[in-house]
Amino acid sequence: MSYDALLWLSFGGPEGPDDVMPFLENVTSGRGVPRERLAEVAEHYLHFGGVSPINRLNRAAITAVESEFASQGIELPVYFGNRNWHPMVEDTVARMAADGVRRALVFPTSAYGGYSACRQYDEDILRARAAVGANAPELVKLRQFFDHPLFVGAFADGLRAARAGLAGARVVFTAHSVPEAADLAAGPPEEGGRRYSRQIAEAARLVAAEAGVADYDLVWQSRSGPPRVPWLEPDIVDHIGALHARGETAVVVCPVGFVSDHLEVIWDLDNEAAERAAELGMGFARVATPGADPRFAELVAELVREHVAGAAPRKLSGFPAAGCTVNGETCAARCCEPAKRPS
Ligand SMILES: CC1=C(CCC(=O)O)c2cc3nc(cc4[nH]c(cc5[nH]c(cc1n2)c(C)c5CCC(=O)O)c(CCC(=O)O)c4C)C(CCC(=O)O)=C3C
Ligand SMILES: [Fe+2]
Image 1: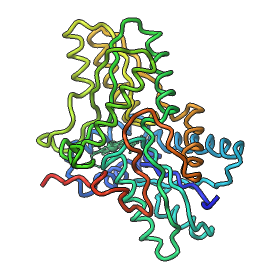
Image 2 (image 1 turned 60 degrees about the vertical axis):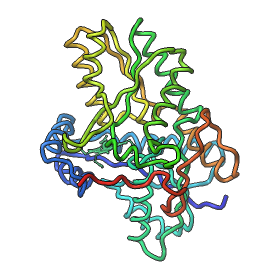
Image 3 (image 1 turned 30 degrees about the horizontal axis):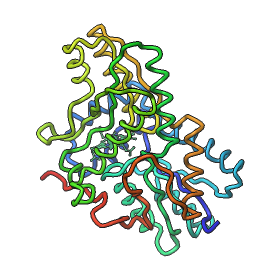
């Protein structure tokens, strides 16, 4: 194999109450997120003792991938680095260089394209390599996997299980909202941008089809930013109200935009959306995310094998395979380019 290691690149999250504000400042520096929003999100973290589940979930997923690699004879040590909290990707890439890693694959913990879900991970790679300097390993990022049969299959099984417990429920897919302008700007202009929201819609379609769901809605969650800036809508909590007004009595929420049960899932869905449904006397179930499913480790091993062999991507949609980058350079002109920040 022409690679020496795999870098598991994620978002990061606080591991105690004192971490919460510095973490939030890292996430939002220069992004125009109002103080009130930060204070509100800090409360969500503090509700869980200031500990995000994300680092624990990543460490568990890495352990599963290490045993999958061992059983498949893939000899790549796995390193863990984050954008916003320790272990920081800059420190991890420095350690990789010190360990003699010359060339590594990168697995980003997002399945999708778009600025926040893809391009920003390239910026992390650029920043980390620049911080390490001449000794920095070459870093090759693996492709987006929102339409991979193992990803879709894990969600579809979760959806079937949730529906089995809640007969007649309306199925609603949800993903992290992003600014309208960011969504429009990210994606080939000849395709009208919207790489992120169109991939989310396609993943929802694939999961619904595999689970035998003919009719469903797609909505958004966890909106941030100043209230005057338009973000993708409607919001899941408002949508539950609209479903109730339409006479629906139960809802199954499938967080197709997320790979694991991080804070936006356990707070914004399991707490806020579930509470709204309860207020309205509606049944509520939330579909499991795929991160802890054994298929997720298989998926990572398969993406590695596919890349190393230069094999055709195994995928369920007709969307082009995208997101594979070298040293954080864009994979194609204007693919998942930076959002234009609202002034
Ligand atoms: C598309 C997308 C994903 C999915 C792709 C991926 O997985 O990467 C994602 C994931 C995540 N977002 C996370 C946390 C946060 N996101 C924030 C803010 C923002 N997210 C955005 C988008 C996304 N975010 C955007 C456009 C902003 C506005 C500011 C900016 O332009 O950057 C803020 C600031 C406070 C606030 O919510 O306002 C926090 C704390 C965590 C960790 C959760 C945990 O601790 O378990 C994870 C996995
Ligand atoms: Fe986010």
